[in-house]
Length: 127
Image 1 (cartoon, rainbow, N blue to C red):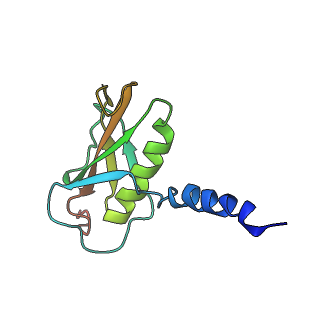
Image 2: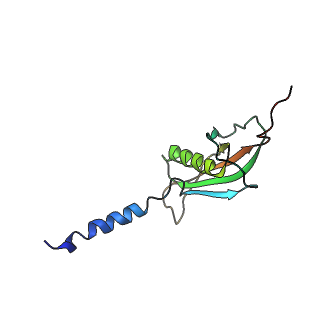
Image 3: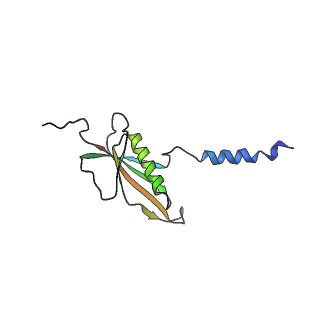
């Protein structure tokens, strides 16, 4: 049996695996303020559209993700991972924007969120 008959299988597999990037590979980041110093937070809180945190905060970055319908939970997961990587304490989700066009002839979504950090992290309440 000739070896060249089986050559397409590993080549096709390599192309398929090459498309699998890092977990936050599709999240686009636009810095909104100075970087956060310190360690990555253990948990990132999630605030929905119109739900603002009660604590004072500052914006770190604006996150966006190009996707299609049905990817919402994956997008939120990737936003949280990217926010943790940036040192954010929380994200504020925004409404997805739909659009079509030459590049995307089918309905396409741009998911958006804002990564934020609490102000006065080290401050303690005094009595």
